[in-house]
Amino acid sequence: MPIISDSAAAPAGAVVRLNTVLLRFLALSAAVPYELLEEKDAQGRHRFGRGRHKYYGIASLVIFFAIFSGYGMGHMLASMSNMSWWGATIAGVLWAVFQWCLERQILLSIRSDASWWEKLFGLSWRTLLALLSASTMVYPFFVESNRAEIDVRVGEMARSRLLENQTSAQLAVGLPTLRTDAANLISTVQQLDQLLVTDPPEVPALRKKATQCWARFYDGETQIKRQLRPLQMLRQQAGVDAALDARIDQLQQKIDTARAPCVSMDHVIAHKIAEWRQQKTAEKRDAMAQHKQVQSRIVSAKSEESRLIADQSAKIERAANSGFAADFTAVADLVRNDANRRFQLLWWLTWFLAIELVAMLIKLSANTDLDWHLQSEETIAREKTQSDLHTKQEEIKTHNLRTSMHNKGEQAVWLADDGKMAQEQLLQALAMDAELKRPLQRLQAHIRQLKEIEDVMREAKTLTDQEKLHVLVQVAIQDLVEKYQTRYLDLGSAAVK
Image 1 (cartoon, rainbow, N blue to C red):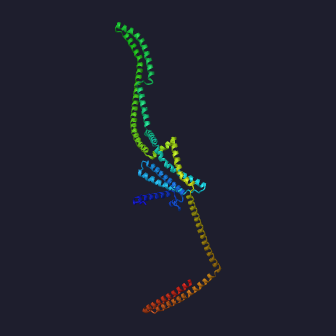
Image 2: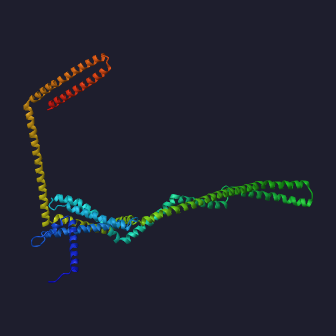
């Protein structure tokens, strides 16, 4: 016979203990006693073989759901920017324990022998819980499988927000309005530059009049010079001639007089042009000053715009790197706009939901030997509890009936007495009251006699004898009071009895 050493027996014992611990945990997860699952008959076979495999399988599914739910919760929390890895791990473990307790309670609330409408009602709200649990498990797998596309969506949303941030920052500081004002002022300066090299609107008409005036002047001057030329030749030949000189001066004055309106008109035109250019130069100077002010305001607005953009951009970048919130927004946008990703999410959700419902469907649909045993024990326990309740209710009714009969018997006795006992007690009380009054009357008579003696002795004017007599009287009164008081108490106790 081979001898097994202690070193070989120790690992075998450890394996057996580990196996026992695992089986006990599976039985606890299935909400069935371990001793019942491992119960054996005389031949060493398990008494509930089929039910044993069923509930160990259900327990494995419960543990599987709890582990995946804990992983999903831990993954979601770990993707948050302010959550540490150990905090997410602890939260995932706690969620797994909660899911394990929830699944176990759901299994306890399911009865395979219930009516079909009870099964349908129970399955409806359990399906809602299973849907929420399946969503928690599906989300991390969907995110990790579409990580690249989600990162792209997060980047696109961040870039779109940055562009909107720049536009909103410009509107906030009024930069578009300032730029429009600056452009309008530049256009005004350019128009003034063009107006400076042109003439006023009324100058062309004045120049036309001046041209006509000079044309008339030149015609008249030509005729006058035709008259003046022969006179000048005569003057050169004749020498000094006052009449001829007067005639020549007259013609010269006529020429000057005809030239004067045209010259005046030229002066008016020149004055108009000077005023026009002076006015436009002043307007240009004002426009340039306004443009300079607008440019300084634009510089300040750009500085404020840069500050607002920088602050908001930092917040947008933090939001893009926030983890769970950014991923969740990107997932929602991805599912809403991409039919393939939407189908993928629904397919995974349906698959996990079906897995969640397997344990409940197995518990509701498959009846095994262990189920019949558990149902029979529950039926026996329920009937025994109802029987105990019925027995206790009957005992209470019997006790109440006995009490009622006793009270009714006493009531009958009192009714049969018809007041005779009360009349006798009244007569006894009156006689006892008369007995108590006689000693009291005697005591009062003795007290009156003692007072009369005191009055007589007071009249005797003997002080020493009077004090002695007073003491004797007081002692006598005290003895009488104690005697009659004792007598009164004895009579009172006899009356009470």
